[in-house]
Length: 409
Ligand SMILES: [Zn+2]
Image: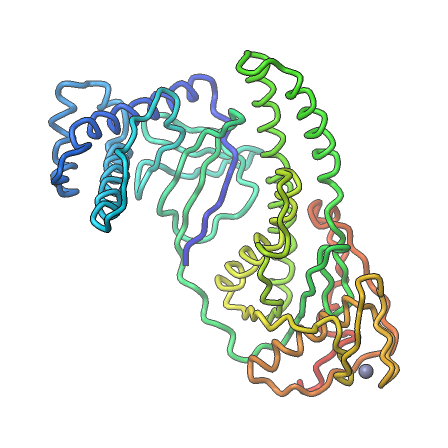
């Protein structure tokens, strides 16, 4: 299985010049070959394209200052673009030609298989060796799992540099008999509630960043379009958007890590998220995309750990009584499920989480014996910032001893 990690780079100004130089050479190569092959009816084979590189180096010594693997990847990309275009034409589509890349429009380059090395230093910043550039300070805020196959160096609109590290890893053997289970109910009022009664609050630490974004947006609208001030202001805003995305991802990584480490089987609803939340406000949409990102991170973390992730039918998970199966209307304002049939009184979201877990257990082919459950559950509320800061308030062992047990083990 493949994973992509994103880490911030802190190049020295000298290194930054070298990185920009690499991108400029990439752009030159791209345009050079495009001028030769654009519009030509027969595009060369990938092999022929690559064979022209050494020849070109003789006349253009600058090319020698860049790792040749990087240049090969540029050719590979161009080759794919040309091929894709030709396919479209074949299918009768009206397509234009590929465009030349203007100065500064080449914002990333790829190191494939070699030409890089991650070096841990034990200091706050580690090093990423990039061939012919040097050891660039990098913030490895996360452990890299698997074998690194590719590194993409990218300059963002904000002016910040990042390394996208792509790894490959054999998936763990899937656990055959899961011994611990959890159901997660995603919410609007709270980020999620699990069937144990742990309720994760929506992140509040965004608020400050969001507030600053609004202020800077207002400032931008007062700047003269195209002016230097306007560009600087845009840069400032892009930095803030980056910050917001990073804060969100950090929270999602840590939260999903907790669930994957603690439970063998995780059950969630199969939600059609793009249709559920749609918002045209950019900063808001970053927050909205949290669910789909969370599911994505959860699923690859579960896969790499051999844990089981099940997506279940979301129909009536809130309306169904998790004890007796009675169905009743549950307007969003009802925060407590009060069953007229069996008399249980339980938090609305926790009731849904239990239903989600039960469906997951059934899907897995395990006996769906009714769980023991105390009539009144106290929720255990956890703030998002406490997860991010690692003061995980989750009571240890809570997974086994709890309110909700599956009695067949
Ligand atoms: Zn009931």
